[in-house]
Image (cartoon, rainbow, N blue to C red):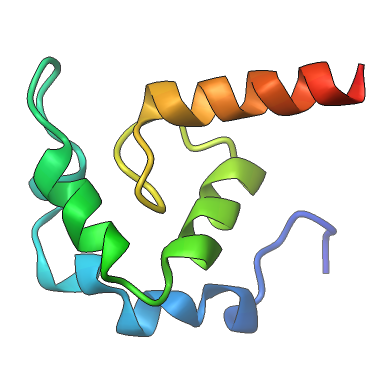
Amino acid sequence: MPMNTITEPELAWQETALCAQAGPEFFFPAPGSSTREAKQLCGACEGRVACLEYALANDERFGVWGGLSEKERLRMRRDQARGRG
């Protein structure tokens, strides 16, 4: 198995994720649209941390993942890089 292959246990959070009950357009809004409602749903989801970790590990560049928008995840990556530098 290649090192970057995601195994089933690592994706188990998707089975109970609240986002599975909403359409993808909710978490991938049109440019300039609000992400507030998606973030509120993420805040109530028990899989939020695993979702965010997945997005960061897989360089997801679009949509709301783990309660953070694309810009927020990019800012988090930059802050982490500065901390290591």
